[in-house]
Amino acid sequence: MVNQHGQIPPETPEFLDHFTYYYSLRRTDAEIAELMKAHYDTEKYTLGIKSVYRLRVKHGLLKTRGQRHTEVTAAAQIASIKETHPHRGTETIRQDLWHKYGMQVPRSAVQSYLNATEPHAVQARRIRRFVRRIFYAAGNNDIWTQDQHDKWGPRFGLWLHISLDPFNGWKNWLKCWWTNKNPRIVVKWYLEACREIGGIPLLTQSDPGNENNGVANCQTLARQTLDPSLVGTLQHRWKLHKMNPKPEAEWSIFRRDAAPPLENLFQAGVDAGLFGIDLTLDWSEKLDEYRQLRNTVTPRHHKHKILPHGPPMLIRSRPDFCNVLDFKIPVPPELFDELEAIFAPPDHEVFQLVPPAFEHWANIFYESMDRPRISEDNFWPIFVQLKQSFIDRAEAMIDMGPVFEVFPASMERVLKDQLDVTPGLNNALNPNEMHPHIPHLVDTQEGELEVDDVEDGMDNDSPGRPIYNLDAGDIHYAAAFSDDEDCSDE
Image (cartoon, rainbow, N blue to C red; front, side, top):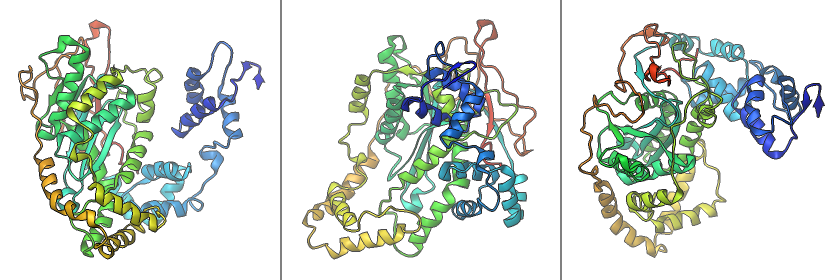
């Protein structure tokens, strides 16, 4: 295709994959035109805004006006979302409509539906008040923060863990396992996230605790191996109470948004006597869906936040387009393999969701049921049927006998597994200690609290502040955010 400005790039599968990816992130035609320049020879081809529009229409990639949805056409999908996530507001529902159904619905249509069906809930979301916090970050992969979430542990035997890059909001992982206290399982999640990007951050950060010692040691050994001048230093920050706010903010959002429908589902099984905390549930798929949603949607705009606004996935994958720096330290695959062998050996007991013999029979019984796709509607019926299959075939499962004898001792060993921080490193457990890991970094304290009850989170006294020495020529800024920045969406 040729226009008056030159030839349009050929529509190869690779070209269309990138084109569709940027469309899926809900970028404007002008932004798509700019982003696509990295995927074709700009000396031979050109792609303008009008050409982007024509390509979208040609391939059925319509936006809000083109899809022409109304309150009536989107009513069934909105009702389905509200049934499972009753606390979601206008903007979060619009994001979910796009993520689940590929529907771009006008904000006015969603607002009209909510005003008609739940006017009191709409008003309640509009007047939410909260505490704003400030976190300092210099760029992508400057620092990764992590934290565990234990509220489901005593009730359902499910223990959660999260890690994120506070600069761009990307969730490195959101995991659910039968323990989050063993440091080796956390190291495994850390290494999986690092392998995905082919490198490691400058620093990691967490609350003090045995479960985080493995990541501290792994991160430190990796940095020291690649840069011997760091020998004797700990490349991990320890933060005490309320000094690691970004993961806590994510847990706050998770508790209001994603947790209620899952808690109701699990509690129904507990109340019916179908489930106890001595049993293990794997709900990783739902958490992966939630993580994907949070990584691909744009947080609510905040005028005092000087960091780039956009989907975390875009800021992470295209720092050049967002005009930010990426501090990722490339790591060869061989070093990842060595770190895994030291801190997270694959044969360790903690990586077994269930004993192998149990998994063998569970797969046989599940196959006999034609492997139905599990959802909220059929979760407990499938669970009961599988449980009954074990009861009915108990005498035939000779290999299960030893499992019940050794599994309790195995779990006890896993829960008692300890990893101490490598001794002799220059870093005390002091939240005020400064680690000059980036040149020209001025003395700042991560996790500074700024308490201000402001309607809808608009804190007029907390602009982003530069954390680089201006005389050095490098200027990057801090972010002011709150635990409601993505959720106060009326």
